[in-house]
Length: 133
Image (cartoon, rainbow, N blue to C red; front, top):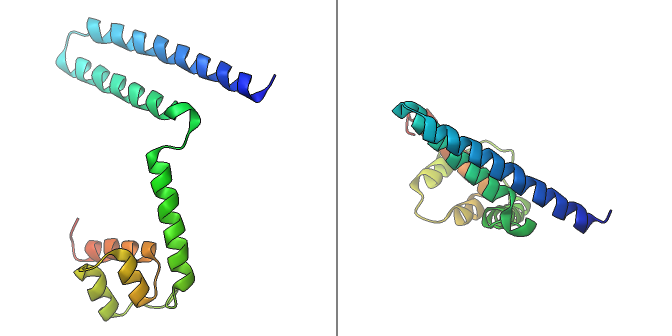
């Protein structure tokens, strides 16, 4: 069996299981008497719909979030190659630049010799230390 035909069969089975599961949840939802039960079933239905949409993402084409993640990784890898202060202690001046955020993270990373991801992680850690969400 060729890959294309296997994929078609898999898609067909996924769609059938989704339709059956959604129908069953819909029946439970209609039969539910209490508000909490109806709310839980409504939440389950929306979760099922979301999972199905994500699994059938335009015939297997990468979604927008995958493209954004790939672009960020590429950009971060370039910043990592230029990072001269990697694996060094953070100075108070660098911390002030990170927390001031008057410029994009890529620019901060370039100026202090760190990767973009390192700048993001440092900001989160500093916020935790200062008790901010």
